[in-house]
Every structure is written in structure tokens, then in C-alpha cells.
Image (tube, rainbow, N blue to C red; front, side):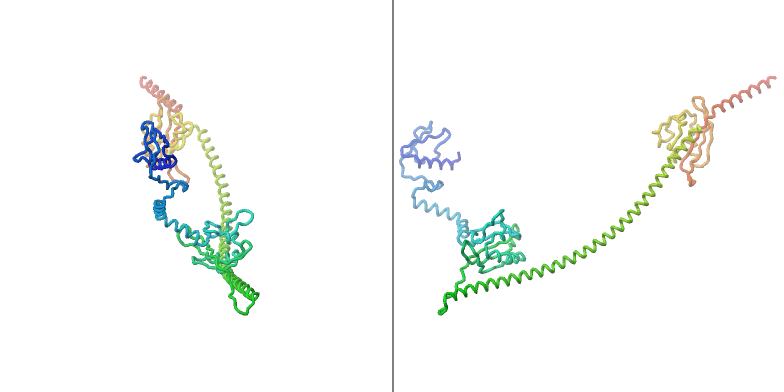
Length: 433
């Protein structure tokens, strides 16, 4: 337990017990440095007895019903407390007794904060709860408030309406209202403060020789004159606002007309662009049809060429300028170890059965001299091929690689060899004769 709280409780126990009364404390509690008017009976069991003493316990922190009538001490403590909070107390007294009733609202008139008693000036409306100042204003104030509110929103100067006659609970009274838009601090900038100040009713001085009814008529006439004057002021203010609004509307109308013309121009441009896009789309469709037709022709020509090359049973290899494989016929797979995935690879990287180590040299020679080279080359398995290397020419007579053809001449070569052997045998017999 905190020492301060312990002190308060022991003081309360001192006050509550009669002289000679017994107080029991827990094993962890003590009286501290002061005995507070108690005598220790058993220190181990924490048993204490209330003693008779002239010292009065201090109960200022407890409710007033516990206070003793200690004039000197009480006055000293109360005075010190008032001194400590004098600014707060003074502010509260000023707000409660001397400050006029006031209301803080936003720019739409919704009530944000109320100071003082505003029941004479405002009353809740029937139906759904509505905290708008214009709806809650009482009769009389409801007519004068809107004009002053509009003026106050135009700048930060106070707007004062005087001698407004209001009806409240069956009676009438007069009030001045001050409406001002708040400029600082920034947290409430733009909000509006409305201050209500009661003023005495207008009383006509008694003039000898004038009857009471005439004086009443004169007072009523003055009230009507004030109301008429206020109506003229409101009318003039509303008229000025209407003129300003009309000028703003004219300016807005001109801007809208200008914007409308720009939109019309933009619409015409968009229409033109749409027509151009439609024309371009038609052209693209035509080009697309032509491209589709060309793709179909190209596919058909490709198929025709492939079938033609395969029908000749001549192994053909197409290379680009870097001697990379561009295309080949099916018969090439019987000479080179080729697959479809080999397209784009250098043809010299391929494994072949040809006994033709000079093929790379001859290929580069043809690219350089543009002169075809023919050779009869044997294979490892006894076949013979007539290899022809020639430039690849495009339709516009441009060299774009090489074409290699491999014609199988195995039968003719074998017959040639047999014929040579027969001639040799015949020549030897003639020489022996």
C-alpha cells in the first residue's frame, strides 16, 4: 500500500474509533513513522489501541461530513486551495455568471458547441433531432439570423443585429446578436460564433399631457419602424447578394458556353478521328486479307518445293552466309546425322560418313568466288556422291548463303570401276600375247 493512502486510512480509523478502541492490521502493515493516536499492544499480531489525545486528525481529503469545525486550519487550507486554482475558478465564474450565452456552429449552421443557457433563444424542433441553428432559432430570431449569418461568412468582421424582438414561453424580450466567422486558431478557422446579449425592452418616457394609450401606440410604432428598417436592410442585403449571384451565374454561364463549344469542337474532332479509324480499320482488314492470302500462297509454295525436292531424291542442304543450317531435305539424314532441332547450327559440327575433309574450305571458297564446286566423294560404307556446292541467289540477285546437293552415283561409280578393271585386264592379255 502506498504511504499516502496508508496515512489517509489510519487517520480515518483514528476518527472512527472511540478512545480505547482496538485496531487490527495485517502482518505486512505498520503505522509508519507516526502513531496517529494509537498505542501498540502486540507488535507481532499488529494490535493497536485508540488513545485519548488532543490532536485532531486531518480529514481534508475526505467528504465534508467528516470535517471537524477547525476554523483556523480549515481557513488556511481552503485559502491555499483557492490560490492554487484561482484562475480556473475565476474563469468558471465568468462563464457561468457574466459571459453571455453563445453557440459555435459550422458554415452550414450545425451546432458544434454551446456556452451558457441558450434556452431563451433556441428550442428543439419536433420530429427527427435537428441541431441546425436555423431550425432551432425561436420566433423573431429566426428572421434576423439568416441575413447576419450570410454576412458573417463573407469576411471575419463581426455582424451585429440589435433590438430583435423574440417570443419565449408566452412572453417577449429583446436581444442583440453578434455573429462572427472565426479566423484563428486554425483548428476552428471558418466556424461561426453566435453570441446572444439580452437588452432591456424599449420604454417610452412619460410625457405630461400624453395619454397611456398614445404612449403604447408610440412604442408599438417604434417597434414597427425598427422591424421595417431591419427588413429594408435585409432586403438590400439580399438584393446585393442576388446581384452578385446573378453576375456569378452569368460568368458561370459564359464559362459553360465556352466549355460547351470546346466540347462540341472536341466531339467533331472525335467524330473525324472515328471516321479515320474506321477507314484505317478497313484498310487494315484489306491488308490482313492480302497477308492471309500471301501466307497461304507461301505455305503452298513451301509444301510444293518440299515435295519437289523430296521427289528428286537428291539430298539438298541450304546454308546461310555463316554456314549455319537453314534447311535440308529428308535424304540428307542418310549422309549427315541431322535432326529438325539442328536448324541454325554450323553444318561443320555435324557427324558425316563422307570422306570429304575439304568441304568447309570449298564452301567458304564458293562464298568468296561465287563459283560452283563439284566433287565425287566416297563414304565410309562404300557409297559415292557427287557433291555440288553453289551460291544461293535470291530473286533480286543477292547472295544469301549456299546450296549443297548430294547426288548418289554409287552404281555409276561401281560400273566405272568394273569397266576400268576390264580394260586393264584386256590390256594385260594383249601385252602377254
